[in-house]
Amino acid sequence: MIKILFQSFFLLFFAIPAVWAAPPEDDSSAADANRNLQGQVTSVSQFSDVQPTDWAFGALQSLVERYGCIAGYPNSTYRGNRALSRYEFAAGLSACLDRINELVATATSDLVNKQDLAVLQKLQSDFAAELATLRGRVDTLEAHTATLEEQQFSTTTRLNAQIITAVSDTFGNRVGGDASGNPKRERDESRPYFANRGRLNLESSFTGKDLLRVRLEFGNFANSNGTSQIAAATGTGMTRLNFDYDSNDTLFVPHIRYYFPVGDSLNFVVGPTGIGYTDISTTVTPATIADDGNGVPSLFGSYSPLFRRGGGGAAVNWNISSELVLTLGYLASTPNVPSGSNGLFNGGYNALAHLAYYGKQGAIGVAYSHGYSPGGVVDLAAGTGSTLSNAPFGNNIATSNDIVGAQGFYRFSPNFQIHGWGGYIWANAKNSGLSDISNGRGGTDSLFVNSGDNANVWFGAIGMSFPDVGGKGNLPGILFGIPPRVSNSDVRQDRDNAYHIEAFYRYRLNDNISVTPGFWVILNPENDSRNDTQYVGVIRTTFDF
Image (cartoon, rainbow, N blue to C red):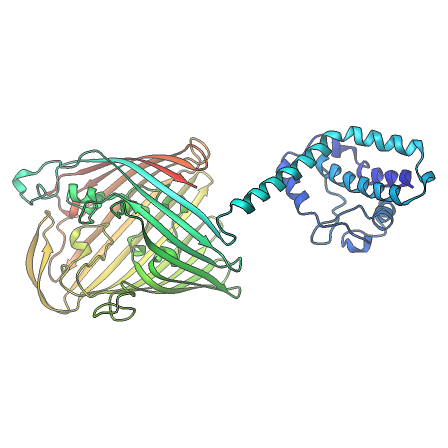
């Protein structure tokens, strides 16, 4: 009986000598295949790809139905023509040896002869190393599983985090003069500084398809009144870093987001705080570019300013097809404050409609955003442009806005891609009164604004990047753009165009650490040629885990 068993086994697995000529090129593929094997089958009819006309059908039928030591794949296939790794053979042999031991233990003493035992001993000797490796892998997995079960943070929650540190400085006389606004004392007030920002994301799934994210954040990129250190020192937000947000080194919760699908084509996002357009849709910018810690270092250069707005609310994504996605969302600025000019529907808000098409080599999107600010802090350009473009009627005037934008990217090759965006903003004053409006030189003038006054802002950028050039995981890139500018207004418009020119090189040390030197130049900062050119240099180090 044992002789027949081994003859059948070797007929199946040794019929093609080329299988044993060399190990597989990718051992991980073989390991994955081993892990995907289903349990022992009891009938050859369970294999959908085995036919009675196959040359090895008889041998396979004998092994399966007489001895029960052959396993298939979860989709009920045997894949008899697939190349076999030595590990897979060892796993199959081990199963048959276990079956033999069962038969020997329950059979009569004359069932096994010396020749059968010799064959068995030779096979055990020849494949001792593979069998030992297989046992070692199983033991290791059991040990790791036991450790994870004892030390796991949660059965439903995982932690991922990003810590960013940066050494930065700017060069060029402060916009409009010194910090007191004295134009006769223009000077470079910035000094080299070292700051950090950390985000800890607790991500939970309850069904395997949904995702609840609660973010903890800390950082010290701002001064005591909350404004960006680099913007305060230079007099313009055009010098801001992409990650220079602040909590005065206090740990707080800035973001809660819950994602869940409904059916095959709809998914929803809801959250009471810290939900931006980037959390309900994509920026249609390569992920390697838009990431705070691993992409473009500047605030303006990362992605379209259109997507830098949000609050708390809900959104739905409709997958019209595998390539076409429509996003509709509504986000209130202060949904958690139940007082006048606040709340879910009575205060500031932003609403988005975004249609994006994703192809094999790239993507393109068209977006429309409508928003309203009751006054206090108006931020139409999300801090990426001139002070006037952020609040064309000043912060004392309630302002509505409509924005249209187009954005996209295209990969010409694995090592070369181009991306860009552009947008136009229509702003409308909703009440009348005196308001302090930026003069482009670091100061303000009190001007009268009439309800119904209009202002128009436009912006755009184009960039090129080169993934994996200089080493796997590296990313050199350059970008040219025109930050948001008030081109037409019933009250005041910007004098000139500012120009943003940037270069960076992300160097990947390993899967968890990257270092990015970056440098950009702002010509005519605050859209005013009377201001000195600003130069910004940064060395960013990012830890992802």
